[in-house]
Length: 367
Picture 1 (cartoon, one colour):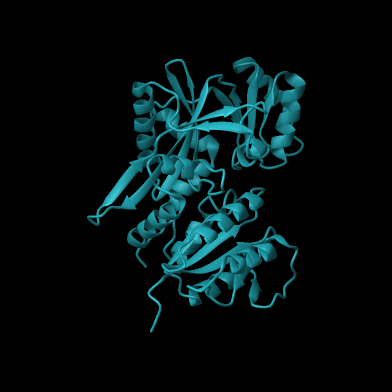
Picture 2: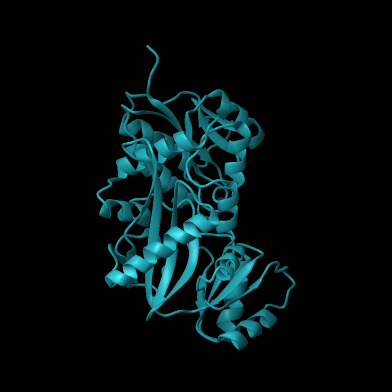
């Protein structure tokens, strides 16, 4: 008898600096997909852009060791020949994936090539259902500069900022630093505009630190964003779409989580993915009115950007003012990630969260 399990291809890894985070998200998700409900095809996109795709689906009899063995291979410097796994360039990987006939592609790529609309466009072209927002929302949210400009144009508060859409290596970064100093002074944040997980981000407290921070950010992206450092309460608020018990689409705004960074100057890469570096308090310690405002704003921004499936918004609250920092369209799904914590506060455990994302994708994206 043919399996009635949902054939789920899970794509992780990727070419961005967030490769390892993506593998951690992918491994966590793979280990939590119910074998009785899902056949699994774990896929890794290597840092060089090659795809590692198993030749066989992992069915209902798969074990935890089966899954871990694949992710051990994904993390190793493998060559082009591994028994049972195809190494394919992207132009051959997509036709091969299409031939495997997945019911849904679970995208857990972060950063370039994963959250920027590229992989979503590939899935659309191949006629494959996939989790998370579509091409336009993904591309817009990944571009911090253009996303902030859109939000500001619709009267959402964002930190004062300056930006450079193209910073060639020979550019005088001191001149850009002086523009930021004149507009809002120190301290300030410097960010690569199209990189996530705080990669390449730093805080500058004087001119030389700002110059160094711009040079660091330029190593990861030619587009640079410099923002005033807003001192306040940092919160994040997630959204998930689901199909409810009546078969209708339903949007859930998750309780905001307060982020208290204890061992770093800001919520940097290490703080995000190292247990014990931060306190993450759900729901955030805010008044009922402020919690409602954060959640209402989150829903409005989610709709404005055109998100679907799931996303997460980061904000800073200073006194009575809420400043929007960014939108994450494929939030981390590691054991320390914030979206699963917000869902858990609503009584949604991690395996159920995966079910919600997959079943929504099956409904929303029609082949």
